[in-house]
Image (cartoon, rainbow, N blue to C red; front, side, top):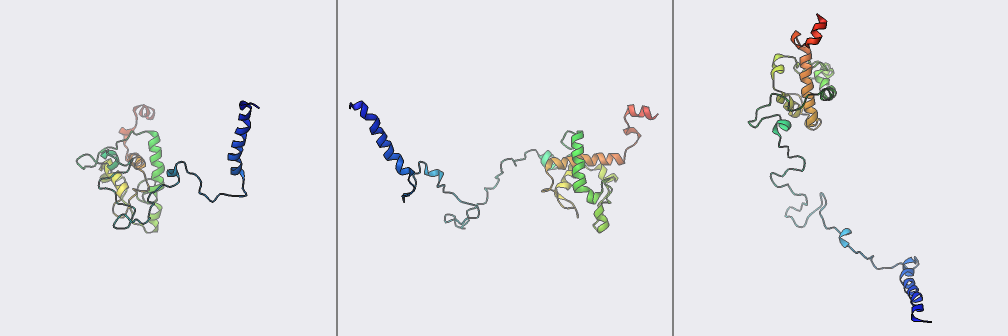
Length: 205
């Protein structure tokens, strides 16, 4: 038999010697498995609420550095997120485009969060007033018709008097939608003949 003829049998014997022990379940190895990249299995790190031997106070969770802002929460637009201008005054007009979709969203959110106290008309006669809750002012007073949009947004955000803050329940977008809808609600209860479109007025006459 030539040397070339011996190559294949020798290779088969070597491969069998390597592979067959790994297929046997009768003699499991007591040695730990081979980890080509141990960092994938062992990742030194602190877990929330875990104890620390490094920090003096023994806590792993650290107070963020002063001025730290979480990603997505920078909110540089003061008018949109705080309803105030650079001088700290409430903005007069909502910084959003008023569309039918926005008004419908505002109406939906208003009916959910505001109408139990303010009623769907905004006159302060919601269902819980009959159960002893302090009546809120009507939206249709001269004073509330004259306040800036930014002040309405701020009251929704931070509350006022016996009204709680809705900062956590209502996102910023929806607070502006409610503000815009409240303006439409005020207009609907305090409209005059000059608010009627010219083409509609022709039909009335």
